[in-house]
Structure formats: C-alpha cells, structure tokens
Image (cartoon, rainbow, N blue to C red; front, top):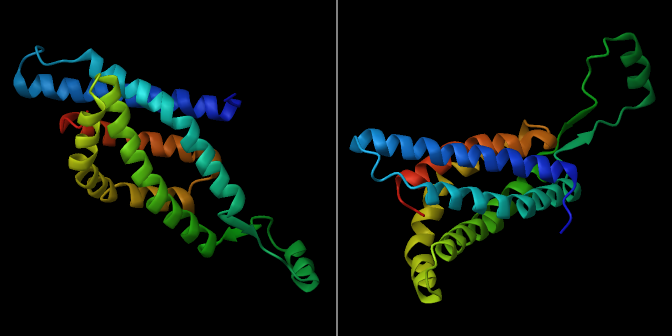
Length: 192
C-alpha cells in the first residue's frame, strides 16, 4: 500500500506519541518500583511497531467514513437568505454538523473498528512476543472483553468529540494524543 502524505504524517505523529506513551509508562513503573530493572525497551518498540502498522488502515477507514457520511453539510440558503446575509457579517457558518452522519460514523466506528482494533492489538502483540497461535488465541479469548470494555470507557468520548468538533485533518492527531494516555494505561496494566 502506497501511503499519501496525510497518512504518512498521521502515522509518524501517532508512532511518536505512542512511543512517548511507552517511555512514560516505563518511567512510571521505574518510579513505582524505584528500580530500572523492569524497564523494557522491547515493550516500547512493540507499541511503536504496532502503531506504525495499524495507523494507515485506521486513517483510511476514517477517511472512508468521512467521505461516505460527511460530518458537516453545507447550509442551503434561499435567495432571500442570500440577500440578507450579504449585508450581515461574513462570520455566518457555511455548514452545519450532520447529526445523522455523525451518529452513523460513531456507531460504525464503535461497533466495527473498536473490536477489530482490540483483536489486532492482542494478535500483533502476541506475534511480536513470538507467542504460538494457541497462546495468541487464548489471549484473545481472555483479554478481548476486558480490553474492549476498558476501551469503551475512553474511546467513545474521544470518538464523539472527534467526529463532531474536530476537523477531519486533525482527528488523527487528537486520537493520537488520547492514545498517548491509553498507551500508558495499556503499558501499566501489562496488556502487551
């Protein structure tokens, strides 16, 4: 897959922020244990690689959703509205939030993307630690629901704000900043 510049930029941002979340989590762990013995550079590198692998398809998914169900729709004005608006300030909104489209994208993202990303996380982390397929399958069976439920405590709020307030070009960055804290949570809870 050839990545366009926006996907590349989003991937670099997400990867750097996720790497930073791993460093933060390792620092918190070292502070708690008062020892650097448990610091794992490999764990940070796994998070970075995971992010580099999943950001492009997630970006493309969000791009598809936005193209199919745009968050904002132009406001159609009648000719009388146009005449009166010409005399008013130019600060009048030219579009408005489409509640229907935002709801569709939100539901698709939370019902399809969240479970797929959860499985991808467990699968790729297991693969990067050279676990067998049966170990990875056990991890999916044991960790999927707790991880998905934990994610549903955070990501729906981030997703809804992203879809309703944040312009598309900045959504990946906002999601990556939220992912910074999510990555720290995952690292500290040893979901690697």
